[in-house]
Amino acid sequence: MSDLNTTIAQTRTAILERIAAAAKTGGRPAGAVTLVAVSKQQPEDRIDAMLSTGQRVFGENRVQEAEARWAHRRADVPDLELRLIGPLQTNKAEAACALIDVIETLDRERLAAALAKAMVKTGRRPRLYVQVNTGLEAQKSGIEPAQAAAFVERCRSEHSLQIEGLMCIPPEAEPASLHFALLRKLAGECGVEKLSMGMSADYPLAIRLGATSVRVGSALFGARPAS
Image 1: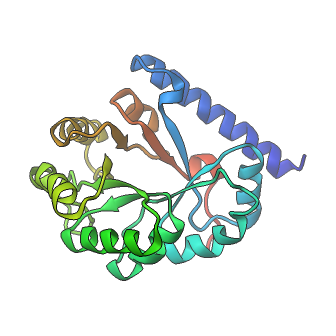
Image 2 (image 1 turned 90 degrees about the vertical axis):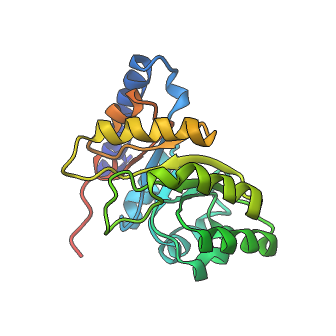
């Protein structure tokens, strides 16, 4: 095993142990939390090293980048699960449905309609999360918290979309716990069970507050190389 493979494997094991400990603190089994390895912009050798550990759930920010990285790997990794965790343009809805297994960034009516059409055309139905802009930040995507429950209901009733969960990215300058607690409250109002929240800096806290998946990049792979 190469030094890179050893380092990646040891890092992943340590993070899985932290996930298990946080889940136990929250009164849940470790298996209740999915580790999403955020592979965006990571070098190919790190991706291969992560795959060699048995990691199968990966997060990407852009459909085009995901296609370049994963389309040729699908045949060799049949149990791969790809999650889109970055904003999705409506004109990429069909490509997303064809490749992605879980879309975590549904955040507006036009995208809901585009995804409904794309699912019919491609014959694939990715699992869906609604992104909530818990901090009401102008520069971030996401439905406003006060509109989340009504939006989820419209997705179901008007577009026949099955919404599995909610996702958020808390503001950097505010305590993440407030936003994780809000997302958990909104999940109850929306009638969903899955919560995608928590990243490299705060995933144990997110798990203690109910996260069912955490998106970990730099803590798992190491810092991305300078472009």
